[in-house]
Each structure stands twice: as C-alpha cells, then as structure tokens.
Length: 336
Image (cartoon, rainbow, N blue to C red):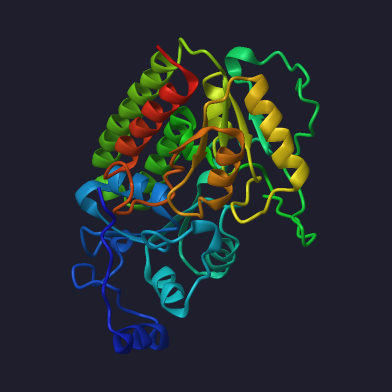
C-alpha cells in the first residue's frame, strides 16, 4: 500500500502556519481526536511507520510521510511545510534515533499524541558485525577478531553513533509486531471512537507478521553458511532473529566510507565463510558493494532495508519486499 500524500499550495500552507488552525486536507477540517470528523490525521516519519499507521488505521486515518519515496531517511531535513503538517496533525509516529531532524521537530511540536516506536520494543547495539542470532546466542568471540562496536568514526572523524541502539527494528518481523501492538494501543487511546477497528486491524497485522516470521524461519533453516555481507548495517535484528551473522561494509550510517582494513577484512571473511554475495540496497550508492564483489569474485544482489518503496523496489509494500529479501538471502546462503 502506498502512502497517501497531501498536495497543498504554498499559499495554503502559509495560511496554516500563520493562523495556526484548520488542517491540511479537505476531508479533515478539524481534529479527529476532538471528535469532529471520522479522520484521524497521522504524520509518520518514514515508510515503515507510515505502513503501520495505514494498516492499523485503515479507513479512519489519513497518513502523511515526512520522507518521500526514494529519499534516504537518514538524510532527511525537516522543511517549514513539514513543520506545519506536524502542528496540524492529530498524531506523530516516528522512530527516535534514526532521523535527528524528525526527533527535534516532533519534540518541539505541540502535537498531542507522539508515538515513538523505539519505546515499544527493546533496542540493541549493533555495529559492522551483528548477529549469531537467538538460536546461536552462545556469546562466543568473533573468530575473525574484529571489533564489534555500535559507534565508529568515518575518515573525517565524525561519530555515527545512534543513541539508544540500532533503530532498524522493522526488519525483524517479531519486533515490528511488538511496535504494531503499541501503535494500535496509542491509536485506540487517541481516537477512542474507532478503537474497536484499530484493535481488529492491529490483530490482523500482527498475525501477518507472525506468518512472515515463520516464512523466514523455515526458509532459512537449511543453509550452507550463516554469513552475509551488506552495504550498511541495517540487518542486525534480522540476523539475530534467524541465527545469521551480518557483516557490513559500513556501519549503521549508510554514508560512512569503510577503511581499507575493513575491506581487506571482508575479503578474508568472504573466503573463510563461503560468502557468495555482496548485498547492496536501493536508496544508496552500490559503488562500494560492487567494487568489493568485483575484487573478491562475488556476485551482487539487492537486500532492501525497506526504508521506502519506489519503482525499483521488489514489491509494492513491506510484506512483498521482505519476501523478496528472503528469496535473495536463501540464494546467497545456499538454503535448500
């Protein structure tokens, strides 16, 4: 399902910002939370949050995503127009720690219902190496001897730490389901007139996520290697869930350039662990991944962090893209 977006003139937006009343859609002229209409107006920070809002809210919500299709979420800077949207919405749904400008804007907004997905499940620390999984959680030291740190510095000395832990929780269907349940409860509280529908829609979504979890468990059960290489460390939760090890070229920040030592290390890991594929993603450059693959004689493929749906995505919504990810992982890991 694609996120519905408002198309509003500059004049209208200026009036909204200046007068501080009204709303951004014709179908929602007043606050739904106040009980004046049947539309609950939700501003979501980026696609995984917008998808939750639409699935849970159904016909009762109008969802606007602050991050446009094809835009890298980590790079988002909030505009004056988006600030106006936040001030006029009934609720904001975001994931603190992923988009600093969103965190700041929502923190400063007067919006009554602020839903932070990071508070709805447990966050963990992941670095360029993550995983071994709940099924292999023996705590053994990495055989390659490299450091596994959440925060690291790029070549310019900038620290790319995500305060509070790795934010990529939606790539683990189990954690995403936990967030969905929390969002459903928040919607029920903020818009009680439609609480029964929100509760029903949440249950349906959680059931679908449980089915997706089972597909990953069975689909990855018989494999020849546990190790996969990605362009940036977005898949730590997925790796832990299914007993895998993610080796990332860069860390949690997709714009961080890897050191020469890291590249050599990955070449050795690929050889030692039978890695066949270097994964890249749809919203950031594939140059480094393809260079590494070329130097090591490996194949390349897409492993999508589902941060946004575009014409290049292997599916039209979260579930379709995640199933495409499963297919790609099965091939790369030699699953039978």
